[in-house]
Length: 303
View 1 (cartoon, rainbow, N blue to C red):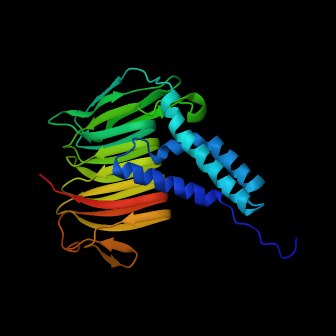
View 2 (cartoon, rainbow, N blue to C red; view 1 turned 90 degrees about the vertical axis):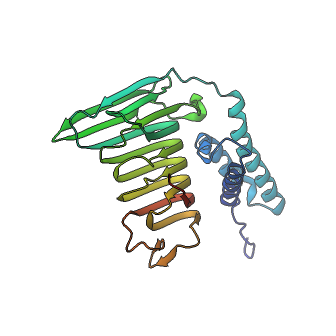
View 3 (cartoon, rainbow, N blue to C red; view 1 turned 135 degrees about the vertical axis):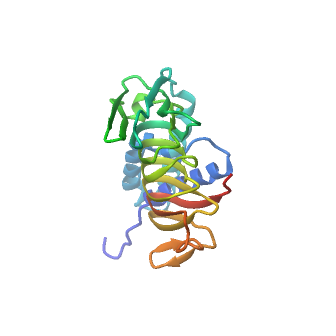
């Protein structure tokens, strides 16, 4: 009708409200679920979008009702699976490869869904050692080769039916992987959905590439060295912990979200730069981006 104002959609604001609540509850330690749990809810997003089109734009009361129903659907989708979802992970499978005569390494880790922990091994000749849990229908593929004094190892999750709403996947499934801390290493990590905790403080990294899909990612950088770090996340929270004394030049980007940068960093062009970067012996070039969520840089004290 001419002169009638078209009502804006409530679907986008409702999603932002839910993401904000999830971030807040996680930061306060009230809940254990993460934003990555939203990946299970893709059918609910379709229902919510349909409700918004059907009743949300017809009247003010319709908008309120649509908003209430959308938030109720999303809240129920987050909490009910925690009560009803089956725990179906299998026992851990051992992973172990030797450094051999390699003087450098390239490691690729491709993780499907759940919780990933990566850390440095203590005084070991193993290149990688740890355990991985698999779900029904999931398998791992390994590729290992030592040539020209370079050890190349790839560990990939394959065959998992990634439909969490329908398949009842186990969010507590975990991979625990220790890496050699003495051999210079290029590390690449990809995560489909879940939480990734990468404690790389003890490693001798030459480069780092991290690609989380949906979830929370914490990266603890080494205490010494000069390296380039790239982190590209879809939806979630990215926290980069930098040791005291490690200088940083960071390029941060996000679609919908925020950034949390130390107050003593200065802005130089498109980059954030920590004090003393130009003359620092130990420093990192960081490029971090997230589609929806938060990127944070925090400092920690080294030993």
